Image (tube, rainbow, N blue to C red; front, side, top):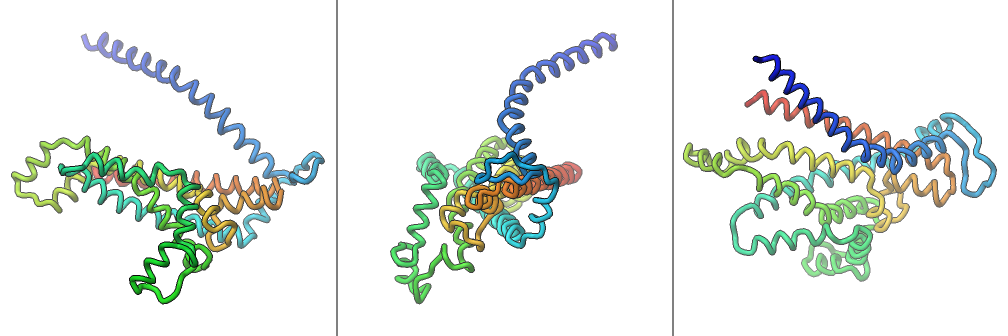
Length: 306
């Protein structure tokens, strides 16, 4: 009696696996064509001395570009800027997004309007919002300096995007303003799926708001929160347009993408620029593995605790 059922279940699972592969194959082929081929070409160019201003066929030079890359202090400065930007901005966006999502999850008048208004910064194209904030942060005509001077916070106008000590923090502030709604939206979606019965039971048991948040809400939304953090962190590591529009090629804020673009376009060094782009890919791949591993470890620890 058990064997036929087991065989039937196995056949059903096998059929589902085949159907899953049939659905996945077109996507895999598309990804290989759209992303795999350009990546392979970039890696190949990184092993050559190709230049945009040289029509001769590029010569294979092996890992020479990578040897120069790891010796370039400007590259490590770009790595440091990118990692610092990602850590600070994602941390602030996660914290603020969580607070906003918790507030919008409560029943109150005008909640729908607030949710729609929250998405406005995120909906504005990055280049447009960066240029807008560039004008607002200007030391001569910027409204931010005017407001701070009027409030007595500063004694003289500050060049937020030109001062090496302030530029990276200005970029972080603009990114937090723009991307916090994305984090809040993902966290709010997770909060909307939580069953209300567990909160009613917790309230009956005498568990206060703080206890309900740390013992119920946070553990239940942790998987969605980890997904949001991973997606946002990977996006922050490849940041280009925000830094380039606000500060150009400034070494104080140059990200790995800005560094690679400078060598590819400004210096027309395709080989070295491709090596920098490949280095960026390797950093993002390592960050992906690290974040996914940490997410699994935390989720596994939470499950063991329950």
